[in-house]
Length: 423
Ligand code: AMP
Image 1: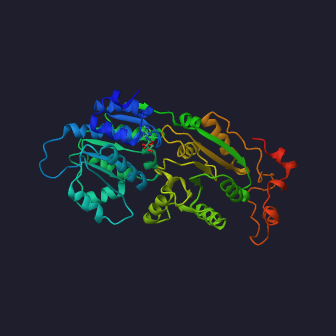
Image 2: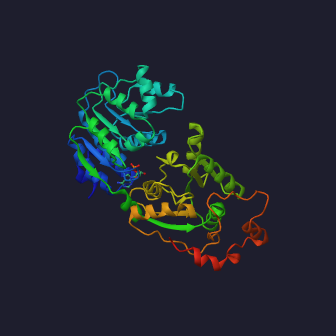
Image 3: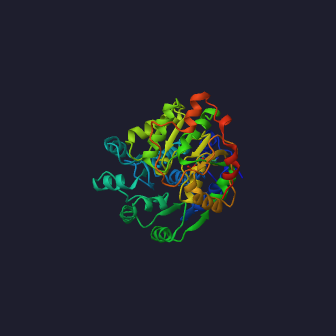
């Protein structure tokens, strides 16, 4: 299958070609024909599957072909609502890329920054608006945005919208949309409250499901290290120093944890930055920019902040903490296997996380290979919730480090064999 077979018009084909895409991803192959027929769509798919192009291409094509002789200011014909600023920026960039030979204009609005540049862009007139819910409603209330001409509406990452408490905002936005429109609804998961919400937004939709778990897990080279909570930072430093990964995304369960990991990496002369909800929008954008252009090799992120991080050359994902929701694991490792690429994902599992590992393996229907040989194998002596040692007192590993940095040499081989079996 090639894009040309999907009846995509020449100016868009040219842009897709310029992006270097050779074949459509499964969600694109399935959704584009439905959307070009102007049908509503319920898409069960996550970020990383190529879903942005799956909806952006047909919307651009409709607007291009519908184009009225230009009278007056452009009106917002397509609205895309997405939960995070990072995703919003990324989606708007995609519209700019795929639409660069169409003359169609888009802009993006999101909270946490001054509104003036956004209202300025809106005043110039745009065809497509990408927005996070809060800022969208705010600007609607101030009279900068009218939705009365919207013909194409996309609700993206619906499950995360609900998790983040946006349900009322979504309802208010939908209430302002014209009833005659094409609606698209995307969610990585489809629990009952999501199905209910989709029923309020869509007419009689066509359904497309991309099995993300299997698809992602098969493409990513995965491994797990059994390691005590205390030794995780040493293992991370050891791994990062023993291989030259160009860019590594490390997942931490908490914001505080992310900051702590960055501090430890920096102390080990590894260039790292954190990205999480406590950082200002400017700091997040800066950290992301530094990571994308290669100034920072390691980005430490929480799950929410990492949504929408789109780095095509991501070499490695490290699950410093295993997520307690198995689907999150798939989202995380999918960062290193965008669209058709493959990648590497390493997970650290301490004794308290073994149940999470079992859930993950069940979901992906696959045993993740265990790395049997490494210097920080959990010998099982760390009890859950045992207070960590006072910082001044050297641990056995740090004493070894002082002696000559050879953890491998001093590894406890007796306990290793006993505790390294996957339970
Ligand atoms: P998305 O799921 O929309 O966030 O897309 C994930 C990544 O896949 C982005 O980096 C896109 O640029 C890339 N991508 C989208 N479609 C294709 C394709 N047909 N071939 C190769 N890469 C693609």
